[in-house]
Image (cartoon, rainbow, N blue to C red; front, side, top):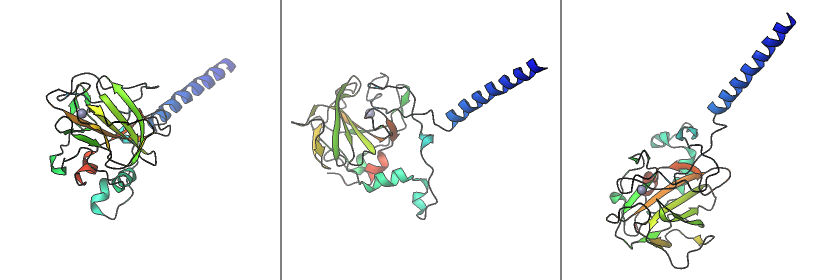
Length: 232
Ligand SMILES: [Zn+2]
């Protein structure tokens, strides 16, 4: 009888552990984000997206985004507080001379087996690439798919802006440099896996995690934030 009680006790304990693990996983406590740092696809090759120096491999999930509180403005019903804060930053289109009408929504396109999670802005090689927002250059990184890339944080270190396939950096560009909105940070090119016949800027935005790692974040579709901007 006693042995049986002990067995039942331990079985219950083990069941509790399993339940706790499932609960943690479902509430997202075990989930971390992963920045989709790199371009791919029709314009770019079939190479897997670059994942520079990641200390973990958990995938980001849009479902971790907070739900929107009831909104008074009808169109805001699908916006999150994050979206609103980003909208308030009034990003500019990060390629000189490109107008909002020229932008294409390709964030959700599947490229080489994964979601693009960025916007490709077509422009002739050598067109100046502009800082979409004010903020410091955090990393200059040469990656196989992305080629010459720039990672920039906004001033509040909430968002990371990622610029890829640059032909070259602006002269003197350094990590730590504070860019003003509209500053030239480089030039459109096709470094990395972009087709040489289709130079473009691959531009991505990530909401940074608490650790503020430049390589980690939750991807945000830049299209809506750029489409309301005036081109420069
Ligand atoms: Zn791209």
